[in-house]
Length: 142
Image 1: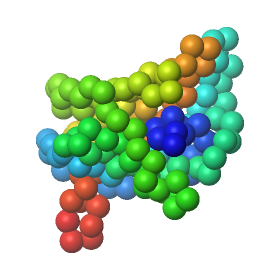
Image 2: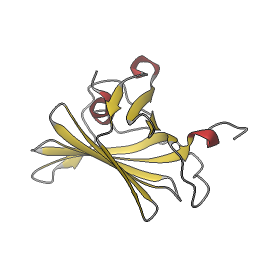
Image 3: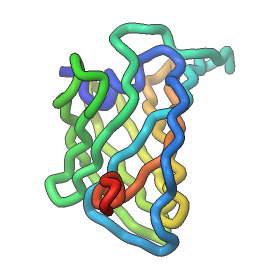
């Protein structure tokens, strides 16, 4: 399974609106919507990523188990990528790893939930933007 790389290698992502977490909150589980994506080559030619699989729309960050799991679309649910490194600094959550010879990083503001992911593979890079909330906030009773 392609995991996070497969997540990013999709067509421009459908916007999804989600509420931001409470300012200053820190959690170990997050649900994130992927809202916009772009692919750029070394000549700065940028555009929507070429569709390779169904568009990913949601991921789950499990900081306890060091995993990023694809939640949707249903046919891709359960694809997993291991988190290689994690750091919290100045209200930012920074995750990174290597998969299929490509480096990736995710940076999220824990106060606003704003998130970006980059995947670098030599002659091109994918950039995705999204919004995250603590998993316990994803429930209407949270």
